[in-house]
Structures are given as structure tokens and as C-alpha cells.
Image (cartoon, rainbow, N blue to C red):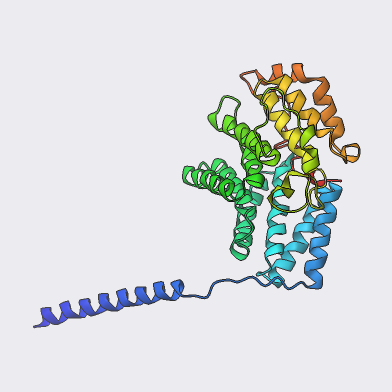
Length: 322
């Protein structure tokens, strides 16, 4: 009898534990979703203004104050999607242009973790912005490589593919840019270059000649509305056009195609705002040094490889500084 009572007691305890666990699961499952509240405040306006002032001015040195203000604005209202997005970009900019620092600390990689956090929040609060998965996928891909986490690497890679399907005019570049850092003989690097060509095709509305690209006839298509608005310069990215062709030319140079790279670089000079682009001297130097740069990329040891836009001191500002 005593043994049976003990048995039933254990059954009761186990039943209670399972029911409690079930309640926990249900409580979590049916918790209210975090929803957006974009209501501006004086602090959020100050933080946003400082972010754009720093980015458009190329003031990397102001990032600590930018991050401080944006973090304060986020904590004031963690449901503001724009603040979450800008805070993600502030952390991404910090790690992307880290070569500006005289001494790059090991903890610089923590900014990628924080960028992932706030891009995730921004996407959660504004799921209709199809640009965000492109940025988030790229950050996840980078984090997977930093931490040697193959699952996270694959998650980021396939998120980029989903992002391309949702908004190819924007996310073909997002994917191609991230993959430009791969070794030139890596299939993913070639895939990234294909993404860049696909991006050009979509912006032009037809297939661009891969050996003799001529973009002059498409300049009349410039627009500030619709999906193709991201193919051109804008208030947010005053030199988006020039930066795109600087990066693509770098990728072609790395791929051992200096002649085609030169033609792609030259397209950047067609921009109406080319004369005011802070990085035009970099592009012009690449045009005059095409053959030597291409030869350096052929070295098996990557140490002498020339700089490309990705991971440079102008990884973000080549498009955004004015």
C-alpha cells in the first residue's frame, strides 16, 4: 500500500511539473507581440539628426556619441522602428569602417552582435521594409564566420537569398557586397559578382553587356520612386550610384578583368553629382592603375592584394558621405 501511494505521489508530482511546463509554454506563446510605436520625441529627433549628420559628413569619429544618443532614444521607446534601424546601422558602420582606427580592438566584433540585435528589432517592428533582411542576412553571415558557426553562416546566406527575392533591386547589391570579401577563387565570390550584374540588369530593365557595359542610355530612367529608386542617388545615399560602380569595379578587378572593371568604374563618372563625390580620386586612381592592381590580385598570398571597397575606410561612406 505504501509503495502504491509513493508511486501515485510521484505521478502527481510529474503531472504537476508537466502541467506547469505546459502553462509556461502557453504563456510565452500567447504573450502580446511587440508592436511599433513610431511616435517621435525630442531625444529621438536629436539622435536621428546626429546620425545623418555624422554619416553624410563621413565623421566616423562621432560614432560613440551617435551610438550613445540612439541607445538612449531606443531605451526611451524600444518600439520605435526607425531608431532601432539607425542604431543597427551605427553599430554596422562602426565595424565596417574599422580600418579608420589606429588600433582595432578585439571587441570591435561585438558591434556585429549589436547590429544583429537591432536589425532584428527593426525587422520585427517594420516587417514591410524589405531592405532590412538584406542587412540582417549580411550581418548574420559575418557573425557566423567570426564565430565559426556554420549554422548561423547558412542562416545569413539563405536570408540574403530570401531578401533578393523580396526586393532584388536593393538586395542584389547587399548580397554581392558582402560576398565581395570572399577569395577570388571562391564560388561565393563569383556568386556575389553575378548578383552585381543581376542588379545592373534589373536597374536597366534589360541584360547589360558583360564585356562592354555602357550605361549612358539608361541615365534617363533615373527615378526617386518605386523599386528602382534604389538604383540612383538619393537624400539618404547622395552618392549611391558612384559607390555601386566603385564596388563593382573592385570586384571585377579582383576577378582578373581589368578592362571590364575600367568600363564599370567609368560609369560612375556619368553621375550628375560625380564632381562633388568625396571619393572620386580613389576611383580615378583605380582607372589609371588597372593593370598593376589586377596583377596584385593574382597573388596566392592575400597580403599584397589591393584594397577593395568592402572592409575599407569608406565601406559605408562611399555611398553615404556628401
